[in-house]
Length: 314
Picture 1 (tube, rainbow, N blue to C red):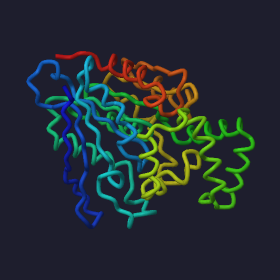
Picture 2 (cartoon, helix red, strand yellow):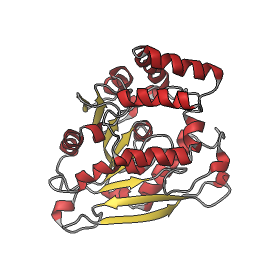
Picture 3 (cartoon, helix red, strand yellow):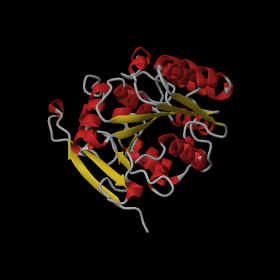
Picture 4 (tube, rainbow, N blue to C red):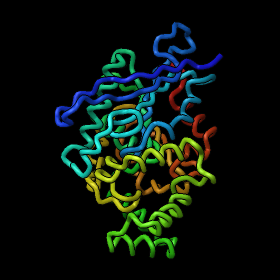
């Protein structure tokens, strides 16, 4: 029997957008099935970017099927995928903020009626930063947190990216030359970025279709990514460049699972503050054959790790 799938849109009021905004979502599984096999806490999957989309997270749909039977809620953040796009806000750092996406997540939770039932969060990359940021507020209904392939501090992220680049001297020379000249839109720069990505972002060759779709969508509308991040994963010059969640981590009060890859741009050094500063039960799993897309590179191991952490609940 096929797993039930529901799609919809939720109004997201953003006064400074100057137009109506909506958040698109997809639920794999069901939130209201009387079958006890589905009486589980739903998992909200938060994609990366900023400006990515839910498509590359779709392997998490495996969690909605036996033996895990966990409803999974995907959504596209404002400015990406099927949600409202605001290309006219390109470069507007006062608009594209962490708090904007925190408000969108809270709006999604409230509109889906998850406060009483409870919910888990899984954020990947930027999505993990956002999930931890939201978890530090101790929101009503949050049960468990998964921070996947995410840094706690963008300063450390950039320093580690530079270290990884130094291990690829020819690639680093091309990247550095274009970054210094301000020609990061050149084909040569993009080619060097791809070489880095193949080693430290996704080592599956060719890239899975879910990731190709996401990269294509990101290229079609890079507004959010360019404004908040910059031209690449390691050349962070946008509004997120000073993001540092470390002071907030001691406020997280739910069991937490950390995941990264042995070849990840989210190196152990970038992940370690989550492990050291979140009080209580924190588990950390490094997948040995993965880079930044562990859920695509070692899908089975990743699903078993997350499913085991979420556990069976009545």
